[in-house]
Length: 251
Length: 251
Image 1 (cartoon, rainbow over the protein chains, first blue to last red):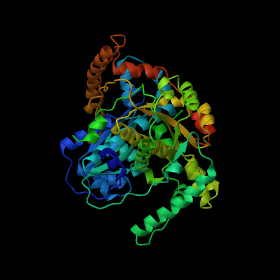
Image 2: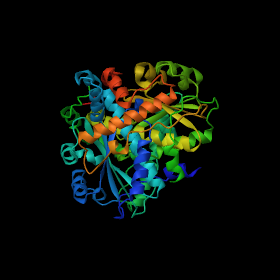
Image 3: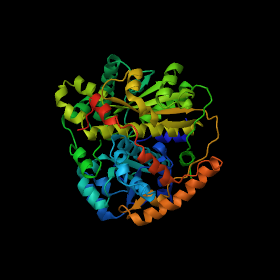
Image 4: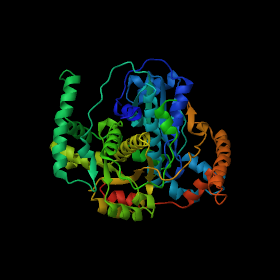
């Protein structure tokens, strides 16, 4: 087991950071690692917005559901799907915008940009953790995207997907047990449901013990309980409409 | 610059592999690293299908556009968005399926699962490369998804997103220059277009030299040229319909 794999296996989200800002060297190593990630057909369809300004951080923290670590960290990165740059590129080549719309508005291109952004982000996480820093993704950034896009001045076809808080950990945190490998990793073809169900039930016991220990018994939910609760309470149902209003109708 | 960051910065796609199959130890380190990636609200909404069977590999290679390295590698992984497992989880908790549909069919949940799958996949890439193995993502897996889902027996709400070929590199390959950091990394807010255009033009020169050197002059396209060509030739426009037919109408 080498150091790189050890770094990844030791990943846990950090939700309390020291106030020390990242150095320029740390930041550049993280962004360069992000950019070194593969990109579908080399479109590099994402942008990263780095936030140091405390007031902007406070506003984003509030918009993302009042998570204090969004305001208090060493650096805050916002990862965006960016199809606007592709538009500019085609414009530079003299291609009329109408000839690009079918591609730009497709589910396929949306998927490509979203995957590109996530691959880059995960390299950023690994780079940060290899430097002894902690991280946490903020999906809550999507809670109120109209306000976020206004604050960050993102043009149409640029969608902030999630944020990433980075900084020196100020809090101990444990690695959370993942689904059993046999529930996630299938050999040759997708596995039938029966063994899947048994694996999920075994995992419930494991997660329930994990939460019980960490919350002194106040939370003892299994994994399927967490999932059921989430599915009964759907989030961010405005997303399709928001994307349409930003010229991404997903056709 | 530590070893982990060096590994990521040295990433280049490998398109020719030795036939040596991955060992069980290599495979487990790669899958465990993938599973250690963060997951939005811990939903872990992805599955990985590992293919060793040569016939299946050949069929997938053909479906993905006749790329020989899809058939010839040390191991082939197919990363899938998996909302079917969430359905099973809610079922185990006795939640009627109708109460889960709004969440399961939403753009938001589709986004969550797609990002989860990509984060896991990028950890797999970093793990493999840290072991001295090479990798290449196969977006062409989406060329003919109905046939792919039939071959891999994926149920509704499980969508193969891309494949990842892994193996011992049998071919030298160079790191491709990325967009300038200033074109991708914005400080405090999204950058206005003017400097963006200048950066893209400078990058065109760099990419054109890169391709000229590597193709003995037969390809000298700049980056914006590549993008314009791609946007004029939209791919996989059946994706929205395909998702609808798999009970993911993206509402």
